[in-house]
Amino acid sequence: MRRLKVAGMDVRYANREVVHDIYLELEDGEIGCLLGPSGCGKTTVLRAIAGFISPSRGTITVRGEPVHDAQRSVPPERRDVGMVFQDYALFPHLNVADNVGFGLRRWDTVKRTSRVNELLAFTGMGHHAQAYPHQLSGGEQQRVALARAMAPRPSLMLLDEPFSSMDVELRGQLARDVRRILKAEEVTALMVTHDQDEAFAMADQVAVIHDGRIQQQGDPYSLYHHPANRLVADFIGEGVFVTGRITAQRKVETAFGILAGTPLGEFAVGVEVDVLVRPDDVVCHESAGHRAVVTDRDFRGSSYLYTLMTSTGVALLSLMPSHQHYDIGASVGVQFDLQDLTVYRRE
Image (cartoon, rainbow, N blue to C red; front, top):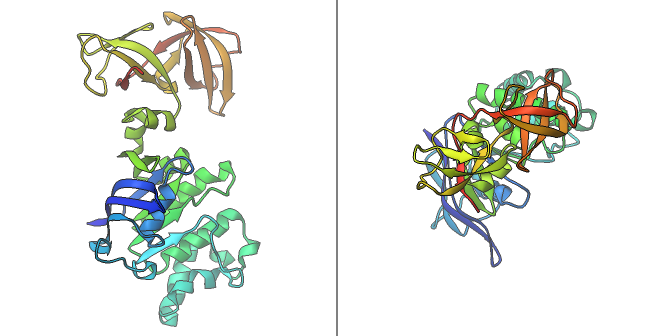
């Protein structure tokens, strides 16, 4: 069953259009993500779904029921939508158990206590039930905020930059933990973030937003390996563009030889194109036919990200295991290992 559907939604502030023609769908139990830089409109979309702002056009449907269209706009408290805010918004005067149970005040005592204990155990916060928010770490507060939002079993969960205030080292692990909790509870959720690592760790489907428009929607693998346009290619992952020309065999001739594969997009023979080359597409090997000089390296624990300057003046990126160690200034052999070709008409 389709849990969320946003169709043709625009949002305007005064005379300025902030988001335009948003189409978005989530199935039951699916986790979606709105990914984009600051100011792109992703939080505006989330707030419109929650009911905090009113779209100027379009429809929003939650679990088959319209919550906004040309005739009506259902108040936020009646949309059956849970919200996890960026700053957690926990009640400082309530302990953890009372924070989690705050939205269950109309439940009878036995059911409320059972649900609170269930969620505290599920989120690993059972031993903090009597603690107050100021006694918790940021990650612990986030788990309490998540449990509180999940407690009434809303039809849809919205998460607004839930990990932005945390250390980088903590974000990835907490994103995976939150995904596990949401999946185990079969919660349908939509989050917003500017961090692609968080998006990839959390979401089944990601929508990349730029200047208020969705540029591409898909699973993380598709976004990384088959970006629909240059905006998505630049925002998702790392990489460089290598110039080339389409040949008769649907191959691309470049300074590094013929690159074979099915190009993204249909181009006539002879068209000048740019080929997207990711760091994991570039292999350093002494027997390779092309040479490059290591000009920079970024140690990432299990791997190095090398910047390699070729004789043609193209700076390539190569992600190699950290045991494959090269000094800056070293000359290395490079070759490409592309499974598919992502190409764009040369600008």
